[in-house]
Image 1 (tube, rainbow, N blue to C red):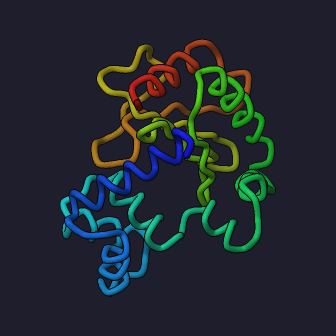
Image 2 (cartoon, one colour):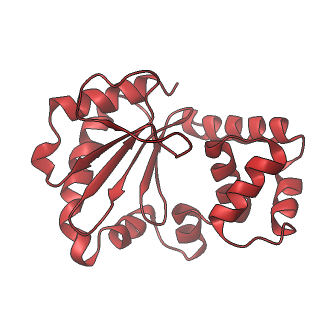
Length: 191
């Protein structure tokens, strides 16, 4: 089992421990909750099982297999197919930003790159970054950084979301040393 697979298994085990139920029992509870939308299920899991946002979000994705990667696999598609869908049409030009970031992040060491429905999640033991198009003309890099960000490029976001900081990017030339330092800070704090 790779470090990334072990990290995912550890997170599921921690969720099961916190909730006091197996993944199968949690899946049944989610399906029986009367809720159908991802956000509703996540909120319900947070309230019902006392999970944090990230754990509840992962639970919903894992239990219902609704993340982009699981959906792609079920349809016989690859992670690359999911990326092609994320960066299609008017958002295609933003893929160069994605590629610049992923290339820089690869130099840090191992991490899981998991395409979701509209963004890409990057994880070590915990998620440290999210990347993808926010609009047709704006790319958004979300970062989970403990404490203060190392430079002013990252803008803090209100508590309760999936990331503590956001960096808006419009072109791959904006993936500079300051942005890479922020991603490295998040990466280092996620293990």
